[in-house]
Length: 204
Image (cartoon, rainbow, N blue to C red; front, side, top):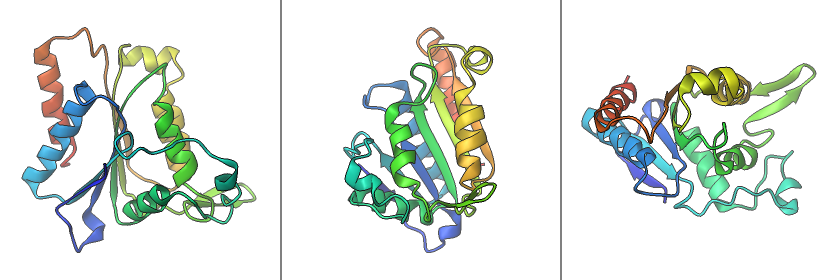
């Protein structure tokens, strides 16, 4: 469910958290709690989009695709998410890495929400992003594989594709990625250390 916290009149300083994990007992959920707690403590306004709790459908039906070029949608969640993006200056994505990339619901979020003539427009040399008001993007992921393995042998999906291509083309700036690798094998102490790091990063 999308939650609203600390409503701000200044949309120039608002964080949008996009969270994608179906299990509340996951370490990803602990990362979400660490992030929101740090933002609360700092008095920073934010919204949380929980894609699974919202029941977001990542599929692109024929009727939705027909409206893509004009930037239209039949999905009220898409319109809602677009308004949240318009009101944010910063985006934090929290999700696991499954099979070397983000869950399909994250890809579906990009496919359905980042509409042509809303998020970008085509040009002779590619696309021109419209979301230049997003000054910072922080992607926080977890994985069973170590981070170096994802970067060197699995295509570096987050760094090269998601941040280096997709979000860059949409005009978003300040893109960075922090992964917590070997999530099921490291000590509880290392988990706690990472959560403290998350708390510092989200209020930078």
